[in-house]
Amino acid sequence: MLSQKGGTGKTTAVRHLADTFHRAGLKVLAVDLDPQGNLSDYLDVDPEAEPTIRDVLVGAAKAQAAVHASPGGIDVIPSNLLLAEAEVALAGKMGRELTLRRALKPVADSYDVIFLDCPPNLGLLTINALVAADQALLSAEAQYFALQGVEQALEVIELARDGLNPDLEWLGVAFTIADMRTVHSREAQASLKEHVGDKLLDTVIRQSIAYAESAERAVSIIDHRPDLGGDYLRLADELLRRLGLTAARRQLKPLLDAAQPASSPAR
Ligand SMILES: Nc1ncnc2c1ncn2[C@@H]1O[C@H](COP(=O)(O)OP(=O)(O)OP(=O)(O)O)[C@@H](O)[C@H]1O
Ligand SMILES: [Mg+2]
Image (cartoon, rainbow, N blue to C red; front, top):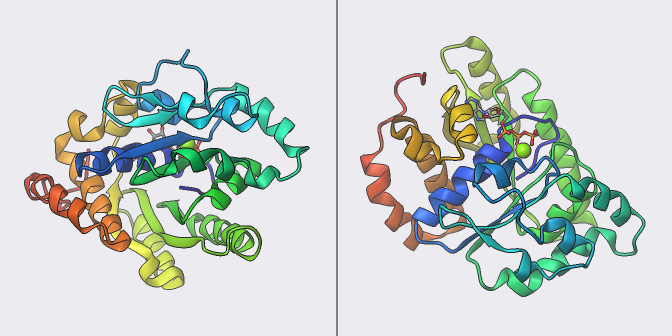
């Protein structure tokens, strides 16, 4: 998951897609590639947990050793501020763009899906993610500049395709943090739709202060506010369909059926 702009809801999306895919019976690994460590915190990984993704990227630990089980049952390779320094060191190395891909290879077969949560820039860590990934998922906050951020991210996806990862596919754009009562959000959605067409996922993730609370408590929105949880269940269902993961969709169905529809604006 990537975006050129910061704060577009990437980490929140990765946290809940990892959660919903896990609830759909898939074996999921979430990799935190941001020195801010937001995903690790949100998944309630011990802040002292070691080794981290930093150790994996500098070659001090194997990926397998850096996998920590989160209380929610999702496997996580966590991150912390030390990753910032490691990124600088990595920049001077041969094959620097391939480091993550090579490091994750030994664990890849143990998982159905691996989520990579990128930092808020298109630097070396994001490039590593795009070289390691099969699919790129973009997030766009419901703002006027959303399209610009998406276009810049798409250019970087193109670069990865032209160079080191020709098989990289573009899974879609998730429309996050939206208040569809406002003209502003509706216009942002329309302009994205016009530019990226069907790549824009239909599900709208409604804006709610409850996400900040859920992050602070390190609890999934599905447990914290089941009335809002339907948004990420619906987004997960769309993505599972695009990925052709039919059995997982079937397992998600009862949760989806029980979820409240998105007809009302969130609080
Ligand atoms: N649907 C939502 N409604 C309201 N607030 C949200 C929603 N989703 C995320 N947020 C909040 O918006 C902020 C940014 O979200 P998040 O950290 O997921 O974005 P990000 O793209 O990962 O940011 P960064 O670029 O810094 O990594 C957080 O405070 C988060 O709690
Ligand atoms: Mg983030």
